[in-house]
Image 1 (tube, helix red, strand yellow):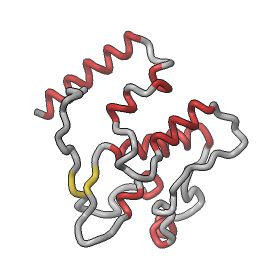
Image 2: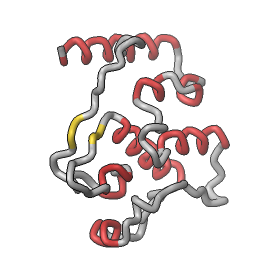
Image 3: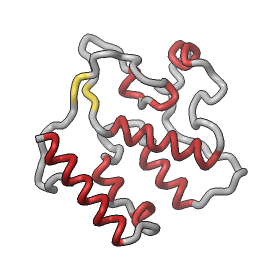
Image 4: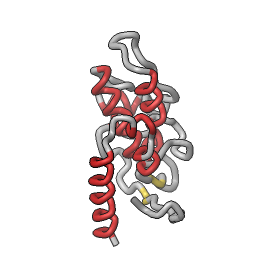
Length: 146
């Protein structure tokens, strides 16, 4: 993990709008304008929320039965201001809250990967041994990027 005092801008310009599978991309990837949007690891946090929702519920939270073309033409992800949960299957309120933290519409308020790593929902089932392994792996990855 990186130093808590590291406040550098780790975002990059999105050079290929529409790159990726639309169901898993966050709203900022669909915002077209003069300048490409800046993206960060928060894009991946959104994707984690979509994937986890799909694992628990059995369908995607936004545009499940739609084609990628329909998702783009109908601005489905741009309109995805909140995630709804069906009555069945029953999932815990903690799982719902975790998914909602991942699927925060405004990237400025969405958790980043480091914050998710520390999230109580994930930590409650994580053994100390696995945490130290993850930290070792994370340290090696960060070192390799330098």
